[in-house]
Amino acid sequence: MNNTYIYAVSKITLVISNGTDNVSIQGTGFFIVKENELFLITNRHVVQPDWKETKYQGYKLLSITFDRRDYNETTKNVEVETIEMKSYNMLFAENDIDDIACITNIEVNDCWSKKTPICIEYSMLANSENFEKDLSICDSVAIIGFPIVYDHKHNMPILRSGVISSDPRLDYSFNGRDNGHALAYEAFSTSGASGSPVFAIQKGFKIGDGLKAPDEFYRPVMLIGINAGNIETNPDKVHQQMSYMFKSDQIIKLIEKACVNK
Image 1 (spheres, helix red, strand yellow):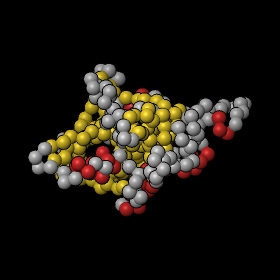
Image 2 (cartoon, helix red, strand yellow):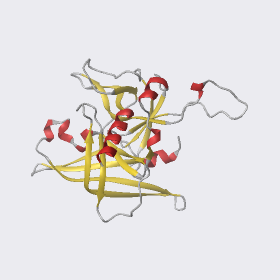
Image 3 (cartoon, one colour):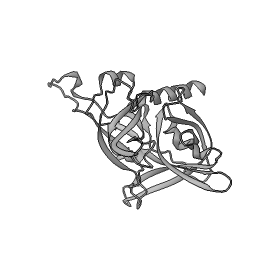
Image 4 (cartoon, helix red, strand yellow):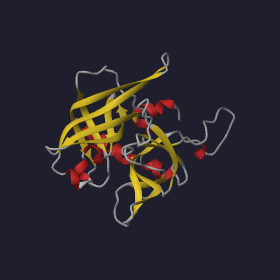
């Protein structure tokens, strides 16, 4: 991985109101590009707070913004631009469990630079076959997002690392019930990191002419999921130093559905 990955992550901010109080909700998102089409991916609970928290029922959306950022090699400064969405379409998982939102057909306000956010290529998404054959417990992962301790001076996300903790061929459950297409990993997720992309770090390296290695020796960086939160014990709500993501093959399904619906 390199520094470019951190610039492909956006801070998403919602302002909602119940008519008396306005509430600001912050999360993380990232853009996927497929055939020049942009798809903003985040958690459903970030853009539809009442889906997960009943306390937000009856609130209306006032605004939703995302940001884009560039590093200027000349000035050594970060350019951050906040952009308000005027209209958009949202797609959610059909099972109503996977905490994923795919935002398409985005139209934004006129006050923006017309610069396209840095995107993650669609080809980087791990598919169902990758979860069966190419990923394993103890594989190193990196999560990039806006937890409480993000870089407040430069308004930049930060990276945390961990390892895959449950069998990627299976759907993980922390309570014995159907928790969707989840995968557990050892990393510390906190408020604001919801919607962060989770990458499986490159394994090995490409073999040149005259060298031989097993087929599984090299695996490129893959986007394997979207962070959805931490795992807590009940009723104490104690953070277990464990988090869970929803698998990227479900993001693929939403993007494919969006393409069909265009």
